[in-house]
Length: 395
Image (cartoon, rainbow, N blue to C red; front, side):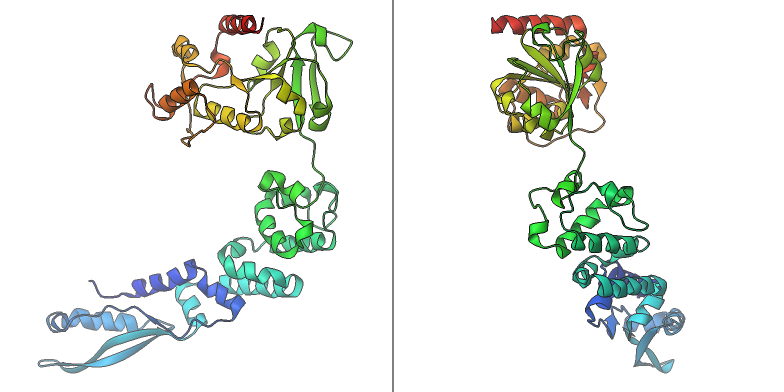
């Protein structure tokens, strides 16, 4: 049957709910009702030929609670004069909510609106824009309002999240809801209380003036002539980023590797040190201006993400060279090939021609689907030989 059924009418109202319009109207006060619903009715031929089915359809529509069905006259040469549905109306928001079983959710949202209007009326625009998200946050909304109010009273507080003293709110809660808190705080706080240059969840503390734990850099000196500490040749050192930036190690070359065992086993190299990398995060190195005067070598996995990380590092240090991320190394260790779970497919503008060619082969799956060679699968004899060739170019 192609005529509009009660289920079809409920689906129309559900779409209004899914767009957030029903809840938004509770914030704005803009009425959506009375509202006519789309109604597809039987044709004249169908009413004549399928009269019993039409009567059943009429009974279904007229029995729906909350809908007002207007009728029109239909005359049949055999069955005489009858009335059939012409229009279906919803006269109020309450009727619409009852039709799709959303009265309780609407009442919960109305309570959020009342609490927000009393505590942070600036956030009413957010509720109007994202009502369904607010409803998802119903159980947490009171604490979110408390956090917003606290920061409004203590802009750029200069304390750790752990030190925020709000009953029932702990630092893990704030960290878990950094995304939505960013949206809320940006609406409430004055511009001078927000560091607009700091974006993303990982820069939440910086954006709103909290203290944050220092970024740490782990490195090893690869030349005994440049040891930083008096005791012992094995110096696995970790410094905060600011201290690392002030460091004057006196080396000419710096290697960055993503694998901890490769970091620990990296062979001795004159005038050099090695840094244990941090994947896509190189903010920790950005402060170290002395790195711009060193030869930099990045050793990552031979896969699409490895080249993406190399490309990102070059955004900070455009003179960085790749190490063991070449086609010869990839082909030499074919028995050790593995699979990359998900590839990155974006364009990388900072790769050198040979790197770009290999990256294109990997992302286009020309050698094998989702091919990767993890750096720890490269034999250390190959590593030592490649370092020997590299060091000869420095002589």
